[in-house]
Length: 100
Image (tube, rainbow, N blue to C red; front, side, top):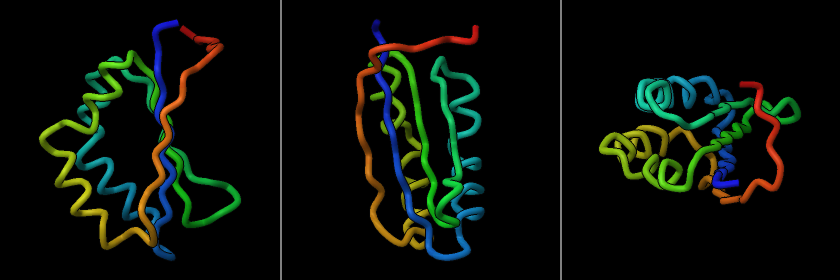
């Protein structure tokens, strides 16, 4: 299996989770739509301020995501909306069931 995954956990300031999503959509939506990456932008059902983003793709595509020209603007625009630094984990899937 030649796929990698990234798991990003973000904690928005109280009441700012939807605003963080709007910034995400502003910068990342078009890039992701045109890429081969599988992406899931999720709200944590147990925490009204937690966001979990899961990306799955080939190793090069995962690395390239954070190297896009707009990524530093995304980080700048979300900095004031986040309660803490995001946690990023790289994982290697051992089993994937594709729906394709």
